[in-house]
Image (cartoon, rainbow, N blue to C red; front, side, top):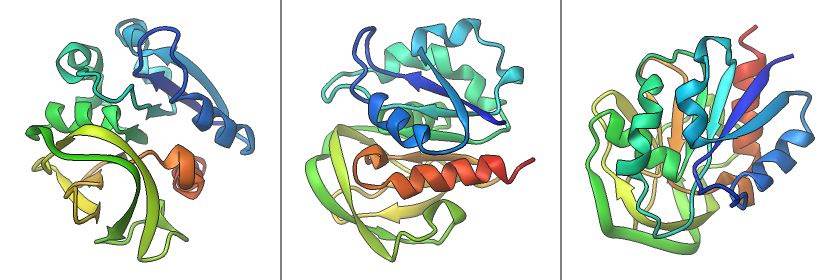
Length: 190
């Protein structure tokens, strides 16, 4: 059985962003466990099958403080899904510009698929998402844009050479199919 490491990007004791992810994964035959981002310095990532990186509280400026804990992302070759804070951290690590309060969204918004990908199977050409962010990122050079919106350009991106996906929105609320599709990528990679 494949196992997913869920990294909680919120401060210790705040599990609001990982609990909905865990509820989705509970319904799928896959193992998972959760750690706080600060544990990333002690994890042997060669023993990890895949990673989901959670969001963090809105307005919580985490990129600078969290970035040292995510340097492993540059060499990790297995599937990763970064959500909101995970999107920002990954983007900046790969050379994106962090846009502070230039494309904020809070609430329910529609996004458009720009390029089809297996992680978007069954999602339609546009869909509703939950947004909770002040910051956003530009598209890093090694990534391709998959989903965009009128308010925020980079809604979902994928690395051009490895199974590294990140999204600005929170699929754990309205888009469990995206998380299930991510798990399908892991399971089919056996």
